[in-house]
Length: 141
Ligand code: SF4
Ligand code: SF4
Image (cartoon, rainbow, N blue to C red; front, side, top):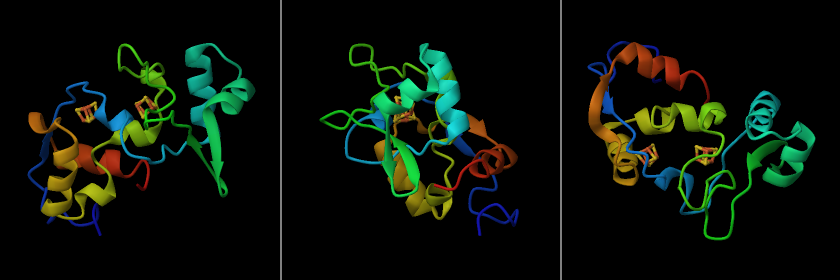
């Protein structure tokens, strides 16, 4: 299991530096899971009540909640002109912790697949093992 042993394939750290390309906020259909605390923070960030924010931007998926997408796959919080997140400082844990998700850390192949979709992987700063673990522990994705 990732995060227990120091003897993991990424024990020497992984390079990541976001290029701000916005690709992870658009494209194929997916889910950005949010909890109440995140909804409250994002609503405050964009100057809305949590109730209005949820009605406009959040959908129910079973017992969970996810941000809505526009036609074409853009996250509803992605600014269509600037291609930046309109709630960036308060974006959900799922967005803040990318690409250090358990699913991407399972194997070098899983990481390589993430890197194919995200040009920020394998470039820039070396993120040490402890920080990777810290990020991965915040949410299970
Ligand atoms: S796809 Fe990667 S590089 Fe592009 S915005 Fe998302 S995290 Fe940053
Ligand atoms: S909440 Fe922001 S960072 Fe997360 S997918 Fe939507 S636009 Fe991207």
